[in-house]
Image (cartoon, rainbow, N blue to C red):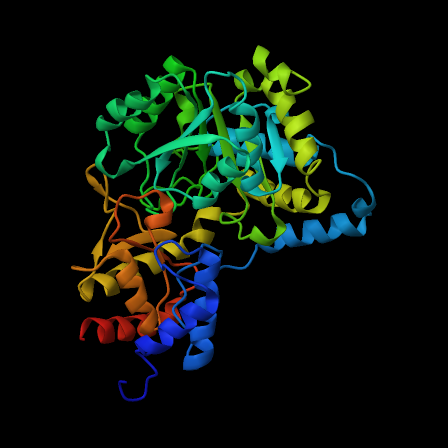
Length: 438
């Protein structure tokens, strides 16, 4: 081992820990297994790892949300069931946010608070994939969040997927149509900005998706968990362009999955929203009545899917989220400046990786370099993602492979910047130098 450092951890110790935790393949183990492995490696080495495996917030929640939630609890909301459709205060602010930051009009009635955006996607699958017996399959535009595929699996549904890597711009149209022509696609799902690649769909690509959704009657599920975090543009001024790009400008067949977790570091309260176009919310699908108590899309979401899963979401997180959104909508809180720290960290971290022989995997949005943000993807010449992860773990750096995200890039790792403060960038640089010098 190098003097004055516990790294690299011996290969024998790595294999011993993997056996202990039941990890047969680093490429396909869960993020939680990686977390367990890194926790054990930290105990053994006595050194804090550069933790990039978990996509969790690394900033403190703004105080206005916390105070609003505390006030709500003191007022006694804990003894009363919340309304299934959500608190009026939050529904109003979600609607305002859509108008001010997306330039899209969505009535407050079509904005439904959910237990995080994970519940928003779960209940949308539940209803959208049962509206037409001929259309029973979700198409994932990957890479993406692996748990969305688990949601499909546990509901006994079907999915297809492809990696966007080679299908940017106009190439996307032909690729999507190759699936749509089969007649079985009910929903699209993608994230924008993307987890894990941090690519951002261009307006050209979003128009292609929207146009095809109209032509083939597909519902687009747009995951906006990292809203406004393409820091190449300022999407943070209420009511003024530029506005966050969205498919909602090109189709009424959309559902927006909105989260408080990253934009406000409110992940622990599990509060998000489902923003459904007004046209889709009120649309009737005769086949829905064979499963749900209503053939109307929005009513089936509210009175069946939401009711059967959580019967709504708690009062106090809703009111905390509402307070945060109100501050943003009123121009009293600049969420973009609050989260821009992630972009600054990414810029520094990318440089350290590149200086030590690493390459970016997903590096372009058509002809533009990808933004610096919450995630980025790396590779190292001559190594698979699994091999690279195994070696980086020995040198005090964690990550996850791209294998579980639907990516075709088997050489890649996803790096999350949220838990690597600027004070730790020196540690990252030293460990990468040690790795690359071997």
